[in-house]
Length: 289
Length: 131
Image (cartoon, rainbow over all chains, first blue to last red; front, side, top):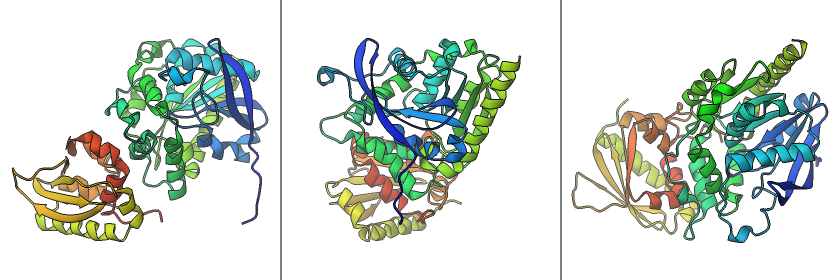
């Protein structure tokens, strides 16, 4: 093959999140209005690499993705060795808002998957004025765990390998093999206890349910997307959530599971193109009004 | 389509043979020495795994044969699971459980510790869709 260098640029930003110093890895590509992309639990920015490498997207917008603290190439905070990592809604929101300020992102679009989609809906309810629209992928109001999250952090087993084997249940059989396994690799590489700590937020914090009614899509559009093979956030879960948000739109995606942008970028692309067009049309309408 | 006892046994035996041709899966299960009960439409099959290979398949019914964990499923659902491109819900053993086509009993932690191995084994009944 001919060697080539991708358009994605990766850098680090040092900033305070909830008053604590963090070194955060982020990467970006493209020009235009910013779109901040959030990865799923137990993974990192690499899930978004196909969008960031696709000129059909990056000719229109500047895409930025970052590794949450403890994830990917972002370090955990000083003193992590004595800390139990448990993500909370408040900490997650603070990380996103702090990063937006540090990178001087002016009302970006927010696109998040899984726990990233959940927090996007929380932000749509709590901080709508800080964003221009929300794309919530594989996102719903709440899912209790059908598994024991403690399985994924034990001294006698490899949490990453077990986590990857668990989430493989949520990858559609149509996913091309290389991307099926690259998607799982990120889980295999996840730091000890990180997937568990993310799942603690995702499977135990049900505070979004009461906030859905507060989301005002006449000010910021909300689009929910869900893969038909997703067993964690099922199409029924996504539909229930979309119905609870006045004016939210919903797309059920064929041949896709819980990691659509990562497991099958070709199948995901038309759905994400439509989501971005929908965001552009809605925000233009809102600006004119 | 339902699966009768003979067809179920044949499928499991074919999977055991296919496993022998998959050194990377056998390697993954090299510490797996357990008996797993696979029950298909009430027909019991006790698969004795030894160092990642299927050493023996014993048929039930039995109240005496010990097993570490069990996957019990409707034959129709397993038949769907073994299609090259299964429909949503039938595409993973946890899908069968979540949507009520089967259940997993016993020492689930042992299953989770060997989850990829066991899933790879179960998928050997499926023809490859994405080479």
